[in-house]
Amino acid sequence: MLCFTSRKLINQEMDGLLPARKLRSLEEHVGRCTACAGYRGDLERGRRLLRATTAEPSESFEWTLQLKLNRAMKEAAGNGIPWEEPSRGPADWLRSFAFSSLAGVAVAVAFAIWVMPHTVGSPSATGEYQIAETVADGSVSPVTLSAGDSDRRSLNQPRYRTLLPGAGGFGQTVSGGRVTRPNLLDRSGWVPSTWSGADIEDLTAIANLRDENGRLRFMLQQMQSENTNLKSLLADVEINYLESDSSEETH
Amino acid sequence: MYMTDKTPDPGRQGRAAYADLRDEDLIALVQQGQKRAYDELVRRFKGRLFSFILRMVADPVEAEELAQDTLIRAYIHADKYREIARFSTWLFTIATNLVRNRVRKRKRTPYMLNLDPAPLSDDDIPLDPPDPHADPTLQLEGRELGDLMAEATAQIPEKYRIPFLLREIEQLSYEEIQQVTGLKLGTVRSRINRARNRFRANIKPLLSNETLLVDLERLEAEMNTNGET
Image 1 (cartoon, chains in turn green, purple):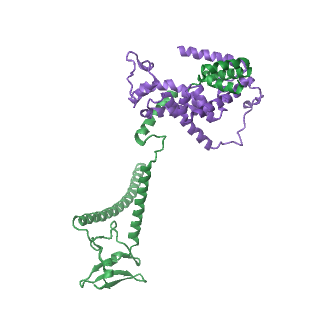
Image 2 (spheres, rainbow over the protein chains, first blue to last red):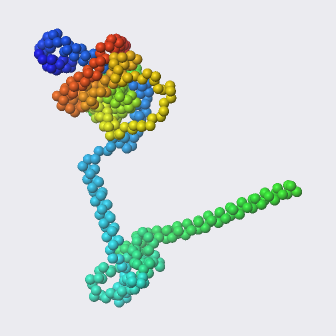
Image 3 (cartoon, rainbow over the protein chains, first blue to last red):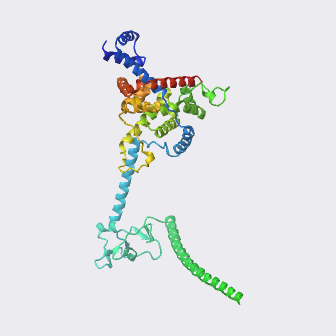
Protein backbone atom coordinates (compact mmCIF):
# COMPACT_ATOMS: atom_id res chain seq x y z
CA MET A 1 0.00 0.00 0.00
CA LEU A 2 1.24 3.47 -0.84
CA CYS A 3 1.54 6.09 1.91
CA PHE A 4 -0.86 8.32 -0.05
CA THR A 5 -3.55 5.61 0.10
CA SER A 6 -2.70 4.82 3.67
CA ARG A 7 -3.33 8.42 4.75
CA LYS A 8 -6.68 8.51 3.05
CA LEU A 9 -7.58 5.35 4.92
CA ILE A 10 -6.33 6.84 8.20
CA ASN A 11 -8.77 9.72 7.72
CA GLN A 12 -11.58 7.28 7.05
CA GLU A 13 -10.58 5.29 10.10
CA MET A 14 -10.74 8.41 12.27
CA ASP A 15 -14.34 8.90 11.17
CA GLY A 16 -15.21 5.27 11.76
CA LEU A 17 -15.90 4.71 8.09
CA LEU A 18 -13.18 2.19 7.29
CA PRO A 19 -14.35 -1.38 6.56
CA ALA A 20 -12.70 -4.15 8.59
CA ARG A 21 -10.97 -5.63 5.53
CA LYS A 22 -9.22 -2.35 4.70
CA LEU A 23 -8.42 -1.73 8.34
CA ARG A 24 -6.33 -4.92 8.41
CA SER A 25 -4.24 -3.88 5.43
CA LEU A 26 -3.87 -0.38 6.90
CA GLU A 27 -2.59 -1.82 10.17
CA GLU A 28 -0.06 -3.84 8.23
CA HIS A 29 1.21 -0.75 6.42
CA VAL A 30 1.32 1.44 9.53
CA GLY A 31 3.25 -1.30 11.32
CA ARG A 32 5.96 -1.04 8.71
CA CYS A 33 5.85 2.74 7.90
CA THR A 34 6.94 5.05 10.72
CA ALA A 35 5.87 8.17 8.75
CA CYS A 36 2.29 6.92 8.48
CA ALA A 37 2.31 5.81 12.10
CA GLY A 38 3.47 9.30 13.04
CA TYR A 39 0.76 10.82 10.86
CA ARG A 40 -1.91 8.78 12.55
CA GLY A 41 -0.53 9.65 15.99
CA ASP A 42 -0.49 13.37 15.15
CA LEU A 43 -4.09 13.38 13.95
CA GLU A 44 -5.27 11.52 17.02
CA ARG A 45 -3.40 13.84 19.39
CA GLY A 46 -4.68 16.87 17.49
CA ARG A 47 -8.23 15.68 17.91
CA ARG A 48 -7.68 15.01 21.63
CA LEU A 49 -6.20 18.47 22.05
CA LEU A 50 -9.13 20.13 20.30
CA ARG A 51 -11.69 18.29 22.36
CA ALA A 52 -9.84 18.89 25.62
CA THR A 53 -9.55 22.63 25.15
CA THR A 54 -13.17 23.70 24.78
CA ALA A 55 -13.83 27.18 26.10
CA GLU A 56 -16.63 28.22 28.41
CA PRO A 57 -18.58 31.44 28.02
CA SER A 58 -18.62 34.07 30.74
CA GLU A 59 -20.82 33.73 33.83
CA SER A 60 -23.06 36.52 32.61
CA PHE A 61 -23.88 34.57 29.46
CA GLU A 62 -27.29 33.34 30.56
CA TRP A 63 -28.70 36.51 32.01
CA THR A 64 -27.42 38.55 29.08
CA LEU A 65 -29.12 36.04 26.86
CA GLN A 66 -32.33 36.45 28.83
CA LEU A 67 -32.21 40.23 28.46
CA LYS A 68 -31.58 39.96 24.74
CA LEU A 69 -34.32 37.40 24.39
CA ASN A 70 -36.85 39.64 26.13
CA ARG A 71 -35.92 42.51 23.86
CA ALA A 72 -36.05 40.34 20.76
CA MET A 73 -39.45 38.93 21.70
CA LYS A 74 -40.80 42.41 22.25
CA GLU A 75 -39.49 43.57 18.90
CA ALA A 76 -40.65 40.41 17.17
CA ALA A 77 -44.16 40.96 18.51
CA GLY A 78 -44.19 44.47 17.10
CA ASN A 79 -42.11 44.69 13.99
CA GLY A 80 -41.25 41.20 12.88
CA ILE A 81 -37.92 39.54 13.60
CA PRO A 82 -35.52 42.36 14.41
CA TRP A 83 -32.41 40.97 12.74
CA GLU A 84 -34.08 39.89 9.55
CA GLU A 85 -34.94 42.16 6.72
CA PRO A 86 -38.48 41.51 5.55
CA SER A 87 -38.41 39.25 2.52
CA ARG A 88 -39.65 40.72 -0.72
CA GLY A 89 -41.64 38.17 -2.62
CA PRO A 90 -43.44 38.64 -5.94
CA ALA A 91 -46.51 39.97 -4.13
CA ASP A 92 -44.40 42.75 -2.56
CA TRP A 93 -42.96 43.73 -5.91
CA LEU A 94 -46.44 43.74 -7.44
CA ARG A 95 -47.75 45.89 -4.62
CA SER A 96 -44.87 48.35 -5.01
CA PHE A 97 -45.48 48.48 -8.74
CA ALA A 98 -49.20 49.09 -8.26
CA PHE A 99 -48.55 51.89 -5.76
CA SER A 100 -46.00 53.52 -8.06
CA SER A 101 -48.36 53.29 -11.03
CA LEU A 102 -51.22 54.80 -9.05
CA ALA A 103 -49.00 57.59 -7.82
CA GLY A 104 -47.87 58.26 -11.38
CA VAL A 105 -51.44 58.38 -12.65
CA ALA A 106 -52.45 60.68 -9.80
CA VAL A 107 -49.59 63.07 -10.61
CA ALA A 108 -50.49 63.00 -14.31
CA VAL A 109 -54.16 63.77 -13.58
CA ALA A 110 -53.24 66.55 -11.18
CA PHE A 111 -50.90 68.04 -13.77
CA ALA A 112 -53.56 67.79 -16.48
CA ILE A 113 -56.11 69.57 -14.32
CA TRP A 114 -53.60 72.27 -13.52
CA VAL A 115 -52.58 72.80 -17.16
CA MET A 116 -56.11 72.58 -18.59
CA PRO A 117 -57.26 76.01 -19.90
CA HIS A 118 -59.49 77.32 -17.23
CA THR A 119 -62.11 79.99 -17.73
CA VAL A 120 -65.26 80.59 -15.87
CA GLY A 121 -68.36 81.83 -17.55
CA SER A 122 -71.94 82.53 -16.73
CA PRO A 123 -74.85 82.60 -19.08
CA SER A 124 -76.33 85.97 -19.81
CA ALA A 125 -79.99 86.64 -20.19
CA THR A 126 -79.73 86.31 -23.96
CA GLY A 127 -78.32 82.83 -23.77
CA GLU A 128 -74.82 84.01 -24.51
CA TYR A 129 -71.85 83.15 -22.38
CA GLN A 130 -69.39 85.63 -21.01
CA ILE A 131 -65.96 84.42 -20.09
CA ALA A 132 -63.06 86.17 -18.49
CA GLU A 133 -59.98 86.61 -20.63
CA THR A 134 -56.71 88.06 -19.55
CA VAL A 135 -55.30 90.66 -21.92
CA ALA A 136 -51.72 91.77 -22.24
CA ASP A 137 -51.96 94.77 -19.87
CA GLY A 138 -53.20 92.58 -17.05
CA SER A 139 -56.82 93.75 -17.14
CA VAL A 140 -59.66 91.35 -17.67
CA SER A 141 -62.03 91.78 -20.59
CA PRO A 142 -65.24 89.81 -20.96
CA VAL A 143 -65.63 87.87 -24.20
CA THR A 144 -69.11 87.22 -25.50
CA LEU A 145 -69.86 83.96 -27.25
CA SER A 146 -72.88 83.46 -29.37
CA ALA A 147 -75.03 80.32 -29.37
CA GLY A 148 -73.51 79.40 -32.71
CA ASP A 149 -70.10 78.87 -31.21
CA SER A 150 -70.93 75.30 -30.40
CA ASP A 151 -67.36 74.15 -30.67
CA ARG A 152 -66.34 76.40 -27.82
CA ARG A 153 -69.50 76.39 -25.84
CA SER A 154 -69.01 72.96 -24.42
CA LEU A 155 -65.65 73.97 -23.01
CA ASN A 156 -67.04 77.17 -21.63
CA GLN A 157 -70.06 75.73 -19.90
CA PRO A 158 -70.09 77.00 -16.33
CA ARG A 159 -68.27 74.27 -14.47
CA TYR A 160 -68.26 76.09 -11.16
CA ARG A 161 -70.68 78.32 -9.46
CA THR A 162 -70.43 80.69 -6.55
CA LEU A 163 -70.95 79.49 -3.07
CA LEU A 164 -69.98 82.27 -0.75
CA PRO A 165 -71.51 85.69 -0.83
CA GLY A 166 -69.23 88.03 -2.71
CA ALA A 167 -67.27 85.19 -4.23
CA GLY A 168 -68.93 85.28 -7.65
CA GLY A 169 -67.98 87.16 -10.80
CA PHE A 170 -64.90 87.12 -12.90
CA GLY A 171 -63.02 89.40 -10.58
CA GLN A 172 -62.77 86.66 -8.02
CA THR A 173 -60.67 84.52 -10.31
CA VAL A 174 -58.34 87.18 -11.56
CA SER A 175 -55.29 88.14 -9.62
CA GLY A 176 -52.16 89.98 -10.69
CA GLY A 177 -53.04 89.95 -14.33
CA ARG A 178 -53.61 86.24 -14.75
CA VAL A 179 -56.53 83.95 -14.30
CA THR A 180 -56.30 81.89 -11.14
CA ARG A 181 -57.90 78.53 -10.67
CA PRO A 182 -60.83 78.15 -8.34
CA ASN A 183 -59.88 75.65 -5.70
CA LEU A 184 -62.39 73.64 -3.76
CA LEU A 185 -60.15 73.70 -0.76
CA ASP A 186 -59.53 77.42 -0.63
CA ARG A 187 -61.91 80.24 0.04
CA SER A 188 -62.55 81.25 -3.49
CA GLY A 189 -66.08 80.02 -3.05
CA TRP A 190 -66.36 77.94 -6.20
CA VAL A 191 -67.93 74.51 -6.17
CA PRO A 192 -68.82 72.17 -9.05
CA SER A 193 -72.16 73.04 -10.55
CA THR A 194 -73.35 69.46 -10.04
CA TRP A 195 -73.19 69.89 -6.29
CA SER A 196 -76.34 70.82 -4.43
CA GLY A 197 -78.29 70.53 -1.20
CA ALA A 198 -76.47 69.06 1.77
CA ASP A 199 -73.03 69.19 0.07
CA ILE A 200 -73.26 72.92 -0.38
CA GLU A 201 -74.65 73.42 3.10
CA ASP A 202 -71.72 71.50 4.53
CA LEU A 203 -69.24 73.46 2.49
CA THR A 204 -70.91 76.70 3.51
CA ALA A 205 -70.65 75.66 7.14
CA ILE A 206 -66.97 74.77 6.70
CA ALA A 207 -66.24 78.06 4.99
CA ASN A 208 -68.07 79.97 7.73
CA LEU A 209 -66.16 78.11 10.40
CA ARG A 210 -62.91 78.92 8.69
CA ASP A 211 -63.80 82.57 8.66
CA GLU A 212 -64.84 82.41 12.28
CA ASN A 213 -61.58 80.67 13.12
CA GLY A 214 -59.61 83.40 11.40
CA ARG A 215 -61.54 86.08 13.22
CA LEU A 216 -61.01 84.42 16.59
CA ARG A 217 -57.33 83.91 15.91
CA PHE A 218 -56.97 87.59 15.13
CA MET A 219 -58.82 88.48 18.35
CA LEU A 220 -56.56 86.15 20.31
CA GLN A 221 -53.45 87.80 18.93
CA GLN A 222 -54.80 91.19 19.88
CA MET A 223 -55.65 90.03 23.38
CA GLN A 224 -52.22 88.47 23.78
CA SER A 225 -50.50 91.71 22.85
CA GLU A 226 -52.83 93.58 25.18
CA ASN A 227 -52.00 91.11 27.93
CA THR A 228 -48.29 91.70 27.40
CA ASN A 229 -48.82 95.45 27.67
CA LEU A 230 -50.86 95.07 30.84
CA LYS A 231 -48.21 92.85 32.40
CA SER A 232 -45.49 95.35 31.76
CA LEU A 233 -47.69 98.09 33.21
CA LEU A 234 -48.40 95.97 36.28
CA ALA A 235 -44.73 95.31 36.78
CA ASP A 236 -44.06 99.03 36.78
CA VAL A 237 -46.88 99.64 39.26
CA GLU A 238 -45.53 96.99 41.70
CA ILE A 239 -42.08 98.50 41.63
CA ASN A 240 -43.50 101.93 42.33
CA TYR A 241 -45.62 100.56 45.15
CA LEU A 242 -42.64 98.88 46.81
CA GLU A 243 -40.58 101.97 46.35
CA SER A 244 -43.25 104.10 47.98
CA ASP A 245 -43.49 101.61 50.91
CA SER A 246 -39.79 101.65 51.53
CA SER A 247 -39.74 105.41 51.31
CA GLU A 248 -42.50 105.58 53.94
CA GLU A 249 -40.53 103.31 56.29
CA THR A 250 -37.41 105.34 56.00
CA HIS A 251 -39.37 108.41 56.79
CA MET B 1 -44.71 21.32 14.85
CA TYR B 2 -43.06 18.26 16.28
CA MET B 3 -45.12 16.77 19.08
CA THR B 4 -43.56 14.80 21.87
CA ASP B 5 -45.14 12.41 24.32
CA LYS B 6 -42.17 12.98 26.62
CA THR B 7 -42.84 15.25 29.56
CA PRO B 8 -40.63 16.50 32.35
CA ASP B 9 -40.33 14.09 35.25
CA PRO B 10 -42.99 15.26 37.75
CA GLY B 11 -41.11 13.63 40.61
CA ARG B 12 -38.13 15.93 40.13
CA GLN B 13 -37.90 19.64 40.63
CA GLY B 14 -36.49 22.39 38.40
CA ARG B 15 -33.80 21.56 35.91
CA ALA B 16 -33.50 17.97 36.98
CA ALA B 17 -37.00 17.31 35.64
CA TYR B 18 -35.73 18.01 32.10
CA ALA B 19 -32.28 16.48 32.43
CA ASP B 20 -33.23 13.06 31.04
CA LEU B 21 -35.03 14.33 27.99
CA ARG B 22 -33.48 14.29 24.51
CA ASP B 23 -32.70 17.58 22.78
CA GLU B 24 -35.48 16.87 20.29
CA ASP B 25 -38.01 16.35 23.09
CA LEU B 26 -36.90 19.56 24.74
CA ILE B 27 -37.37 21.63 21.60
CA ALA B 28 -40.82 20.06 21.19
CA LEU B 29 -41.64 21.27 24.70
CA VAL B 30 -40.31 24.70 23.78
CA GLN B 31 -42.70 24.66 20.85
CA GLN B 32 -45.47 24.02 23.36
CA GLY B 33 -44.35 27.09 25.29
CA GLN B 34 -42.28 25.57 28.09
CA LYS B 35 -39.55 28.06 28.82
CA ARG B 36 -37.77 25.70 31.22
CA ALA B 37 -37.14 23.25 28.42
CA TYR B 38 -35.43 26.08 26.57
CA ASP B 39 -33.32 26.86 29.64
CA GLU B 40 -32.16 23.26 29.65
CA LEU B 41 -31.21 23.47 25.98
CA VAL B 42 -29.26 26.65 26.69
CA ARG B 43 -27.43 24.89 29.51
CA ARG B 44 -26.55 21.99 27.23
CA PHE B 45 -25.44 23.94 24.21
CA LYS B 46 -24.02 27.26 25.39
CA GLY B 47 -20.49 25.87 25.88
CA ARG B 48 -20.45 23.90 22.64
CA LEU B 49 -21.76 26.82 20.63
CA PHE B 50 -19.37 29.24 22.26
CA SER B 51 -16.37 26.98 21.62
CA PHE B 52 -17.32 26.40 18.02
CA ILE B 53 -17.93 30.07 17.29
CA LEU B 54 -14.84 31.19 19.21
CA ARG B 55 -12.68 29.03 16.97
CA MET B 56 -14.28 30.66 13.99
CA VAL B 57 -14.15 34.33 14.98
CA ALA B 58 -11.23 34.22 17.46
CA ASP B 59 -12.81 36.91 19.66
CA PRO B 60 -14.49 35.85 22.93
CA VAL B 61 -16.83 38.85 23.08
CA GLU B 62 -17.97 38.39 19.52
CA ALA B 63 -18.24 34.65 20.01
CA GLU B 64 -20.46 35.10 23.05
CA GLU B 65 -22.65 37.54 21.20
CA LEU B 66 -23.06 35.18 18.25
CA ALA B 67 -23.77 32.22 20.51
CA GLN B 68 -26.52 34.25 22.18
CA ASP B 69 -27.93 35.30 18.82
CA THR B 70 -28.01 31.66 17.77
CA LEU B 71 -29.95 30.64 20.87
CA ILE B 72 -32.36 33.55 20.50
CA ARG B 73 -33.02 32.59 16.91
CA ALA B 74 -33.61 29.02 17.95
CA TYR B 75 -36.20 30.19 20.48
CA ILE B 76 -38.03 32.57 18.18
CA HIS B 77 -38.02 30.12 15.28
CA ALA B 78 -38.60 27.03 17.43
CA ASP B 79 -41.85 26.31 15.61
CA LYS B 80 -39.89 25.87 12.37
CA TYR B 81 -37.91 22.93 13.71
CA ARG B 82 -38.97 19.56 12.32
CA GLU B 83 -37.47 16.34 13.55
CA ILE B 84 -35.99 15.44 10.19
CA ALA B 85 -32.61 16.36 11.61
CA ARG B 86 -31.09 16.30 15.06
CA PHE B 87 -31.64 19.45 17.06
CA SER B 88 -27.88 20.00 17.29
CA THR B 89 -27.62 19.95 13.49
CA TRP B 90 -30.35 22.56 13.22
CA LEU B 91 -28.74 24.71 15.90
CA PHE B 92 -25.29 24.54 14.34
CA THR B 93 -26.78 25.43 10.97
CA ILE B 94 -28.08 28.65 12.51
CA ALA B 95 -24.72 29.29 14.16
CA THR B 96 -22.79 28.60 10.96
CA ASN B 97 -24.95 31.03 8.99
CA LEU B 98 -24.50 33.73 11.59
CA VAL B 99 -20.74 33.18 11.68
CA ARG B 100 -20.49 33.28 7.90
CA ASN B 101 -22.43 36.53 7.78
CA ARG B 102 -20.22 38.03 10.43
CA VAL B 103 -17.00 36.94 8.73
CA ARG B 104 -18.28 38.29 5.41
CA LYS B 105 -19.18 41.59 7.01
CA ARG B 106 -15.78 41.76 8.66
CA LYS B 107 -14.07 41.24 5.31
CA ARG B 108 -16.04 44.15 3.87
CA THR B 109 -15.00 46.43 6.72
CA PRO B 110 -11.45 47.65 6.21
CA TYR B 111 -9.01 47.40 9.08
CA MET B 112 -8.14 50.70 10.74
CA LEU B 113 -4.41 50.87 11.13
CA ASN B 114 -3.11 53.48 13.49
CA LEU B 115 0.01 54.94 11.93
CA ASP B 116 0.70 57.18 14.89
CA PRO B 117 0.28 55.01 17.97
CA ALA B 118 0.15 56.59 21.37
CA PRO B 119 3.55 56.52 23.05
CA LEU B 120 3.95 53.71 25.55
CA SER B 121 5.23 54.26 29.02
CA ASP B 122 8.55 52.72 29.93
CA ASP B 123 6.80 50.03 31.94
CA ASP B 124 4.85 48.88 28.89
CA ILE B 125 7.89 48.19 26.75
CA PRO B 126 9.28 44.74 27.39
CA LEU B 127 13.01 44.70 27.97
CA ASP B 128 13.36 41.51 26.02
CA PRO B 129 10.58 41.34 23.43
CA PRO B 130 9.73 37.82 22.28
CA ASP B 131 10.96 36.79 18.89
CA PRO B 132 7.93 35.78 16.83
CA HIS B 133 10.06 33.33 14.87
CA ALA B 134 11.48 31.62 17.90
CA ASP B 135 11.03 27.92 18.51
CA PRO B 136 7.28 27.31 19.02
CA THR B 137 7.94 24.66 21.62
CA LEU B 138 9.45 27.37 23.80
CA GLN B 139 6.40 29.56 23.27
CA LEU B 140 4.28 26.91 24.88
CA GLU B 141 5.57 27.71 28.33
CA GLY B 142 3.35 30.14 30.17
CA ARG B 143 0.65 30.04 27.56
CA GLU B 144 -2.71 28.38 27.82
CA LEU B 145 -3.16 25.28 25.77
CA GLY B 146 -6.52 26.62 24.62
CA ASP B 147 -4.87 29.73 23.15
CA LEU B 148 -2.39 27.62 21.23
CA MET B 149 -5.14 25.45 19.82
CA ALA B 150 -7.20 28.51 18.92
CA GLU B 151 -4.21 29.93 17.10
CA ALA B 152 -3.56 26.69 15.24
CA THR B 153 -7.22 26.45 14.25
CA ALA B 154 -7.45 30.07 13.17
CA GLN B 155 -4.75 29.46 10.57
CA ILE B 156 -6.97 26.98 8.73
CA PRO B 157 -8.92 28.68 5.91
CA GLU B 158 -12.52 29.34 6.86
CA LYS B 159 -14.06 27.08 4.23
CA TYR B 160 -12.11 24.10 5.60
CA ARG B 161 -12.44 25.13 9.23
CA ILE B 162 -16.25 24.94 9.48
CA PRO B 163 -16.62 21.27 8.47
CA PHE B 164 -13.44 20.39 10.36
CA LEU B 165 -14.68 21.83 13.65
CA LEU B 166 -18.14 20.36 13.20
CA ARG B 167 -16.55 16.96 12.73
CA GLU B 168 -13.71 17.04 15.25
CA ILE B 169 -15.37 18.89 18.11
CA GLU B 170 -19.08 18.53 17.60
CA GLN B 171 -18.68 15.03 16.18
CA LEU B 172 -21.35 15.57 13.58
CA SER B 173 -21.54 12.92 10.89
CA TYR B 174 -20.64 13.74 7.29
CA GLU B 175 -24.32 13.79 6.38
CA GLU B 176 -25.08 16.22 9.18
CA ILE B 177 -22.20 18.46 8.14
CA GLN B 178 -23.59 18.32 4.64
CA GLN B 179 -26.92 19.55 5.98
CA VAL B 180 -25.30 22.33 7.99
CA THR B 181 -23.00 23.62 5.29
CA GLY B 182 -25.00 22.78 2.19
CA LEU B 183 -21.91 21.21 0.59
CA LYS B 184 -21.75 17.96 -1.32
CA LEU B 185 -20.70 14.90 0.64
CA GLY B 186 -17.45 14.48 -1.29
CA THR B 187 -16.60 18.15 -0.72
CA VAL B 188 -17.25 17.77 2.99
CA ARG B 189 -14.93 14.79 3.15
CA SER B 190 -12.12 16.42 1.20
CA ARG B 191 -12.36 19.67 3.15
CA ILE B 192 -12.15 17.84 6.45
CA ASN B 193 -9.09 15.91 5.28
CA ARG B 194 -7.38 19.08 4.08
CA ALA B 195 -8.16 20.87 7.31
CA ARG B 196 -6.76 17.95 9.31
CA ASN B 197 -3.52 18.10 7.38
CA ARG B 198 -3.29 21.86 7.88
CA PHE B 199 -4.03 21.55 11.55
CA ARG B 200 -1.44 18.83 11.91
CA ALA B 201 1.15 21.03 10.21
CA ASN B 202 0.25 23.90 12.57
CA ILE B 203 0.56 21.87 15.77
CA LYS B 204 3.42 19.65 14.64
CA PRO B 205 6.11 21.71 16.40
CA LEU B 206 4.11 21.60 19.63
CA LEU B 207 3.44 17.88 19.60
CA SER B 208 7.01 16.97 20.49
CA ASN B 209 6.74 19.01 23.68
CA GLU B 210 6.44 16.81 26.75
CA THR B 211 4.74 19.56 28.79
CA LEU B 212 1.95 19.77 26.27
CA LEU B 213 1.26 16.07 26.44
CA VAL B 214 1.21 16.19 30.23
CA ASP B 215 -1.20 19.13 30.09
CA LEU B 216 -3.36 17.25 27.64
CA GLU B 217 -3.59 14.23 29.90
CA ARG B 218 -4.42 16.45 32.87
CA LEU B 219 -7.18 18.19 30.91
CA GLU B 220 -8.63 14.92 29.72
CA ALA B 221 -8.63 13.58 33.27
CA GLU B 222 -10.44 16.73 34.45
CA MET B 223 -13.00 16.38 31.69
CA ASN B 224 -13.65 12.77 32.62
CA THR B 225 -14.08 13.72 36.27
CA ASN B 226 -16.52 16.50 35.36
CA GLY B 227 -18.39 14.17 33.04
CA GLU B 228 -18.82 11.59 35.79
CA THR B 229 -20.13 14.12 38.27
